[in-house]
Image 1 (cartoon, rainbow, N blue to C red):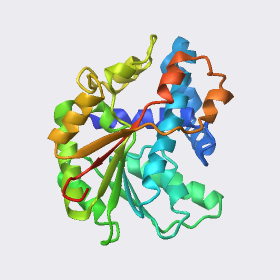
Image 2 (tube, rainbow, N blue to C red):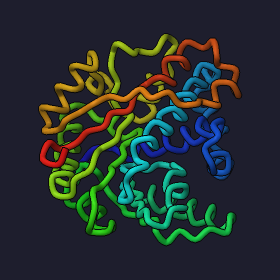
Image 3 (tube, helix red, strand yellow):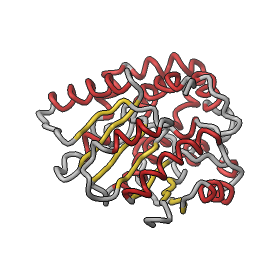
Image 4 (cartoon, helix red, strand yellow):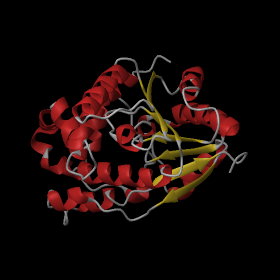
Length: 278
């Protein structure tokens, strides 16, 4: 597909800075290694302070996804970015975790993970890496084959599907459904934007849209019912989850009275299943 998804990759470095204010392991080290603070300040300039709500969003969505992935031992993350999830989860030897991203991006990520593991004296043979454009069905299937053959699969989209318009979402979801029809399991995603939970102005997400050169006018939904109907039309059962999670970055950055942070930390994750294996 001749679509510029490589433009999305720098946002992964950017989000590593905001995630570093959490208590999630390895996040501060990842941010420092990528010099992500400088990138954030250069990106947002005079709006940098307004962008700090992204810390609450990044931490909360990460932790809500982890609630739903904890019962799976076969895990594949789409467009992994700079997430520490694989390094953390594979401390359990029964877990196999496949990190996927575009070529170049996944090579950088693999080098980062290897350096972190070496620095902490960790062995992580159960982390696999695959270059994947998730809109390519064959590429995604090849990555799934890096997992053990037995057992359902948890696929994760944290920050990828949010950039896709509806046509692109349907391509991706069709690829996912083929996997879940065959293997069973779930797609866990934080990437569902609905108008009823819109952020207040000023909204740095508009700047991110320009940064990645993506038209964001067709990526969201009017409300949860419209989102649910869209996913059901794509062949899934779908449910939004709003579990409470502790968001350390809100207190560390003194964002208790920041309206955008209060909205961002309560955004749900969605869990999609194929009715064939629900």
